[in-house]
Length: 356
Ligand SMILES: *Cc1c(COP(=O)(O)O)cnc(C)c1O
Image (cartoon, rainbow, N blue to C red; front, side):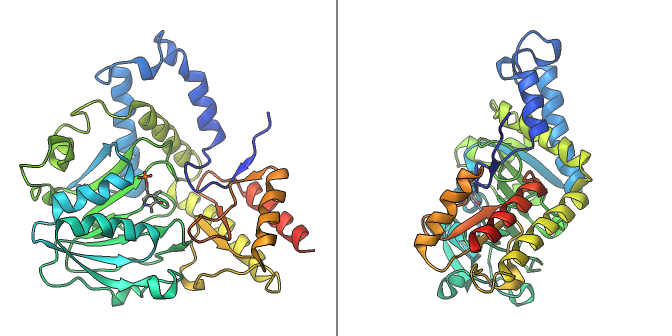
């Protein structure tokens, strides 16, 4: 079987054992005579999967008591609207404008009140982040929003700010790639298709006292308490994505848990940034070394013509998805949890060959 090394930013590569387990289960789920995606979401078979996925997220991330773990539809993008709708009760919030995704969160939040941009990275072309200790929330702010990893710009918070208002984080592209102090956040959300599974389910981890803020006149689905009260079974949840997420979570457990995964991610990112540094300026990272992402390694070549040749040559060698986002250009290697170290080694060998 020929599997390529998949460097796409999302939907992204999944662990092979997960895909194989899903394949084996698909037609006849563990002797039930039907597949899980044809089964009632109120069945025991599905219930086990749902409960297991919630439990593993809690265990792996160390989610404290007093938080709910929700499975929602609509992607991380729906959270750009749901968060202000549910939480911006003072009519004010804060946001760190760190990149393309933070901008989208800002665009929606502004529809529900006044958003103070407490840091604006646009004048540095989103190549750096503020020091965590310099970030503060403003008066009467309902919450402060950050993006833990800017998938397109290739920057990542290494330490998180401590602020007075509840801290809200879009962790779509680095959730479960490293340990995080969940107790310092009011709300964490992530679309699954970068690091956790297929598109279709969004994980929301919310501190329970924040549930009480939700205005009663919002549509039922768009209220967090609806899902918290019904354990994310108010309506039909995205059964198949949640099933795959559960397999991915088990795979993380089998691969050393979050500490083991984080260590491997570190090694992969370090190796790639080192290869860039060792290229005598042929490859160049546009990003502040202090905040370079371990998930999305963005780099440039001397000109766009060579970048095109580089990406095409990589594809011929079984490495796909390396083209940078259309808004920033260049090359981007997304090396999420499921990218094997062999994929990064193969990429580095090709970078050296291309340079020569
Ligand atoms: C991909 C991505 C999103 C959008 O996710 P959807 O599930 O497609 O809505 C939001 N934020 C970040 C950081 C992302 O990487």
